[in-house]
Length: 396
Image (cartoon, rainbow, N blue to C red):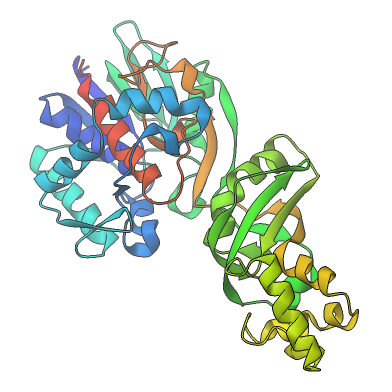
């Protein structure tokens, strides 16, 4: 056994950074990845552009239960340090609306500079290593794979990711390994995910994109409104404003099994109710056809979709249907369409500042395997880079 060896389980963003961090400090490290490739999920981030992190990187953009842990990591390795890290790899970056991207606008560039550094540092990578157990040995720890491989070590960093994008190898196996070690798992549910809504308006407007404002209403409790793109689909609602409110809805539906859940949508957030009412009254006085009442306010498809509403002759009802349209949510789309995982290894079972397990000496966690869920906009990758580096610092 190599007594000072660190084994990293998972070759995604956090795992690669943990390997680089350990090797840069002179530690001996082996990176184990269950698929034939490293960093496949990195390539899909930011629609292929890789939204590296956000200029406002701090703990307030993460789930409440994890904020103390997140702050303890960012205090050691925050936005400036992440940017310096990628600068040291030769990656040029720029910011756009607070989001930070590689200058090349290619996620492949990010993965490539990381792979080059792994090679420069001489980090060995065990591909097709599907870890089945992390166990204590007389002298430290050992990990085993489905193929019967066994690696003895002094330290393990579990960076197995969550369950989103299962085609890239994210199947929740990291949660299984953590449970074997005695850790509690906050039930993983899809986050930043489209919503399933059975509503005729979605059918009539399928494929239509508009700027709108949306908020979740869970058990009659309204959430915070988000204004951005709304997309009507054959299964319900999507678009960035829906993705941004989906976490609380997914937790309510999939973890707490609540059923009284709606999305309240303002289809015309650029007009106040009084102004909209006055404009509709003006059009009614001009004897506009019902299907033309929204022309110039909303895309033409809305005319036919709202024709029956205007035929009722009640403009107050029409205003309410536009400014506070309620959609009953029956579910979320699955892991293949979820950008992130909400849930994972309970944050209060992890030592702040180092990310070592409070239950098993020598076992550390980083990335999405933990119950750390950030908002869209580079926060989740920001956590992956930072937590990976910090977990790698504690060389055996």
